[in-house]
Structure formats: C-alpha cells, structure tokens
Amino acid sequence: MTTPSTVPLGYRLISGPPHVDDYLALRERSGLSPRRPDQAAAALRGSWAAAHVVHQETGTTVGMGRVLGDGGWYFHVVDMAVLPDHQRRGIGDAVLTTLLEAIRREAPPGAYVNLLADPPGRRLYERHGFRLTAPSSEGMALILG
Image (cartoon, rainbow, N blue to C red; front, side, top):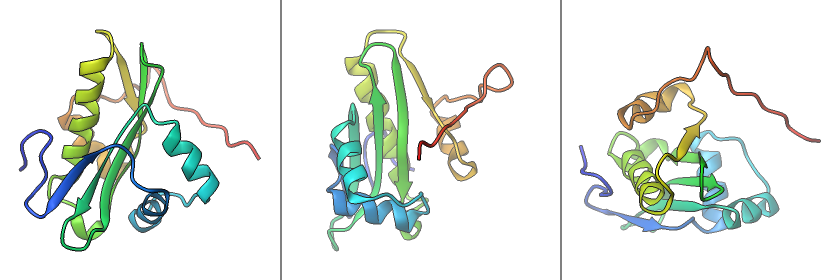
C-alpha cells in the first residue's frame, strides 16, 4: 500500500487536471460515460481541485480525480478513474488523498464532502471515511437534453 499522496515507483502524481484528450481517453477506457471535447474542456476548467497520475515510461495518464466546490461548504468528488491495467496499485488512493488534503488545507473547517460511489470504488471511499447517506438521503439526478 502506498503512503498518503504518493504513487508507486514508475508513476508521477500531478496536481491539476489532465489534458482534455487524456481526460476523454481515461473516461472511456476506465468505463465512465463518454463525453465530448467541449464538455471536457468546460468540466476541467470548472474544477475546484484536480489531480492525475501519469505512467512515467509511456507518458499515459492512468488515473485522475476532480473536486467541484464552492470553496466554503460543499465539495463534490467526481471523475475518479484508474485504467484497468493500473488498478490495485494505490493510484486511486493517492489521487483521493491529494484531493482531500486540498480541501482540508484550503476550505474552512466543517466542509461537507460527498460523492457518488459506484460499487468498485466503495472500499476506497470507505477507507477514507466516507459513509452511505441512505436512508436519510439519497442521490438524485437529472440529465438535461
């Protein structure tokens, strides 16, 4: 297991979002829903915080995560993804640790941090202290056409 904010040998953790093309490729190859380049560019610009991991030998972006937030109270972790061939190496843990450290460092005490947890990521999020909110609250969504 890696220590907080570190990645295994051969990888580099970078503060900030990946390039738009890398973001789109990582979303597709890791199983997240595909997006258009214009959506990706706007999303990356709108990040409150972001981090990504690059495989040093190939230069490939292999992991990422972002935070959307108002800077005061609400922070939402999104786009947590690691390429399948690079999973189970501590990359997602390092990205999430980096994002949570940014919130702890820059947000006022008492920040509310949430996320939508797909089954594969639940163990990671639970290790970082996230708990299910249901039944007292449940996530809802609306996709505008």
